[in-house]
Amino acid sequence: MKKFAKISVVLAALVFAFLFAGCSSDGDSSDDSSGGNSNGVAGQSLEGFVKIPAASIAGTETWKPESKVFVNGRELEIASFYMSDHEVTRGEYKAVMGSDPSTAKACGKDGKKLTDDAAKNNPVNYVSWYDALVYCNTRSIKENLTPCYSISGSSNPDDWGIVPTESNSTWDAAICDFTANGYRLPTEAEWEWAARGGESYTYAGSDTIDDVAWYKENTKDTGTRDVKTKKANAYGLYDMSGNVWEWCWDWYGSISSDTAGAGPASGSGRCLRGGSWFIPANRALVVSRGYRGPGDRNYGYGFCLVRNAR
View 1 (cartoon, rainbow, N blue to C red):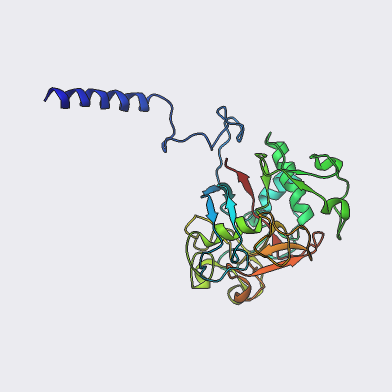
View 2: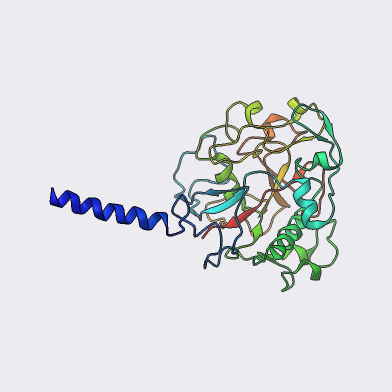
């Protein structure tokens, strides 16, 4: 009895210490704010983001549906990262950049047209890959984070000049610091790993496209829809299939066993994933790949954000 009484006292002391130590509810505060962690900012939460687990891809897995990114022999280490649980919205883009460039009609989930502030929760569109880099660094700087991208040695978009509307060799030579704690685009491998959600569905979260996606057949070509109005996948991510195409960091090219984790060294354009509101179901598959020139803008192009979680 003395032994059990002694254990009870120790347990009570541990519980008391935990309750008054200022710990977070999950016992891990290291990733959500700086608190002495160089990967965060003091007092800043990661609201609207979910933590995607790390993965070691051996290159011997059987993927269902079959992957064009996780190909046979391609070994990858995907570090854990935070990903926004929704596509960047018109409201979020305007708050950072001062204006909303979107040209697609905005609708609610009932198909009713939305205008002005009522459209703020629709995904931003008519943004190029170059525009996405500017947004990422501008937002990072505004939130006192270390920007991920640099062009001609500068991480300040004010130094980059006017955003090109067609391929530009200087901008194409942008460098990404994957160790920085600011916002960036996902690599194509990160995007597909996140979209699959640890599951084997045809679309991001379901084998039934209408559960998870806004696409040509259920929007009737009328426009984008509010984000997060369809079912999320198992990682808690919305609209990874449909609504707007999402830019990835990578150049688009053939993937082989020796392709780097950040994609090919060059390619036909920059990768787009996920399909969009005016594209048929077969382009919203978790394995479907697309690309366009990095300066191209279209009312179906948007993006999601990721952040380092290491």
